[in-house]
Image 1 (cartoon, rainbow, N blue to C red):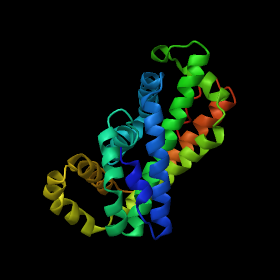
Image 2: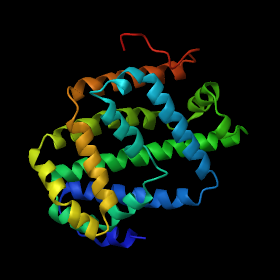
Image 3: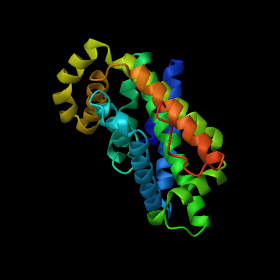
Length: 249
């Protein structure tokens, strides 16, 4: 709907150019996926993986210092079913974003878009691999998941996904330490609602609030990355219990 606005916007920095290209890629992917016959399957797989992540990182997920941050990660960044309006609004206001936002904030947004796009591309590939094998997405088991994971042609992208989580998490942490941002978000709520951008504003505010509450974000990110790399190694090596990790991880 807003693709032409993305294309026609003049950008003057590398950060703005990166965000522009990622939004174009994401826009095109979203529209292709919306008409895909396996759309519902990708949503089922996304839910299955979110539950798996909660189980693998249950100690972190239940930790009061990390719960809100992980909730934001799983429910806002990894929630392709419910964010179409938010994503359309990002496309719509892109010309204003590149005009008014500093490069640091554009880089944060670019990282979020890249992570969301890559995650959804990987989910679609898994849905197609399940379909090729005649396996219902709603009946997926850990064994099925590991089978199609090993058949993936996007293993390098899966490694990149883990590193993007770390990069985006670190960017968000630096971003929310700016006290001025909290004031600006509070002041801009009413104008955002008047501009029909309440959902986008709420998304930004949830991210700010979630990461603002967390201490030792670096420790959380390091632990997530190490664990997910171990899970990946376990799956690819055919480990009988790929999601069971040593207690010190």
